[in-house]
Image (cartoon, rainbow, N blue to C red; front, side, top):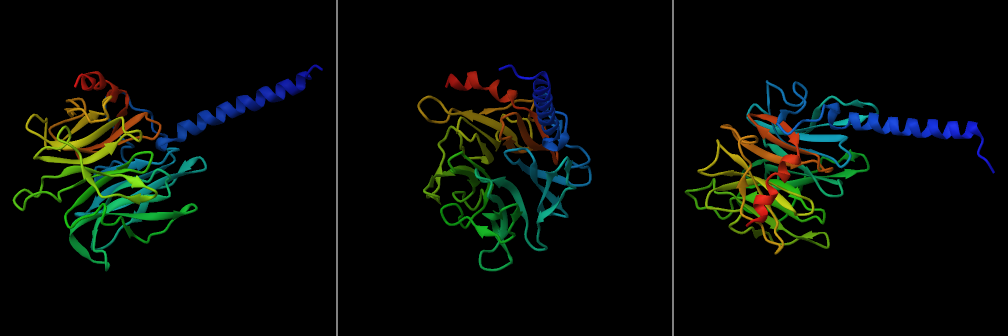
Length: 308
């Protein structure tokens, strides 16, 4: 039986509208910003990255319809967010802040039901302490509970824990100065805690292809653990702190980290790397603003890494 021409026309119109609506949705993602090239650009200038404030660690959700980021306000940090509501992004507003302690470095768990971050809030009371711990809040349907939960002793110590990122299986990478001497408290290293049946296991220090006797922190791990990007302070660096990258080799170990070069790094401090869930964009902080760049730049380092 032949399909009536009118039916074919309606079906064509339906699929045309469907494709068009998807294009519109894609244009609305990432705050509707024009995609960057392979040269870093300030992300959402005068909306997210402003001249009046310092913006730091940031993270998008899987659909690129929610954005969380840290902002320094008069020497104390808070977490703000914006999300796509219909065809419009909400005005950025504060999600977490406190008059005494800071909150910063937001990162979503793999299932996006938790938002992790760092804070120097004490565990037993709403007060400030000397070191930062990793905490999280939980999402109930579409709303966040503002009840802060400490990530526990497998992650936190009596020293500083900074910045968080996750593998797809829920393993958590972070930095800490727990092993630093009293004279060298800026000697941060990168650790991993494996997730076993929903529980974090005791943290382990990464080997010396990543960690040195200097500063390594602000680590982003590819969800499939194919590469790490982190901030380090080293003699061959371009400035106050540079982004470095390491790839996992065939044997399952991390290759020796290499500087990501002067296209990314400057005389300023580059930190807080994050690669979007679709793998398209690398975000990072530089000169107190959030930048983004086409993630193709990551692959330019891979052949050299595989030679190690």
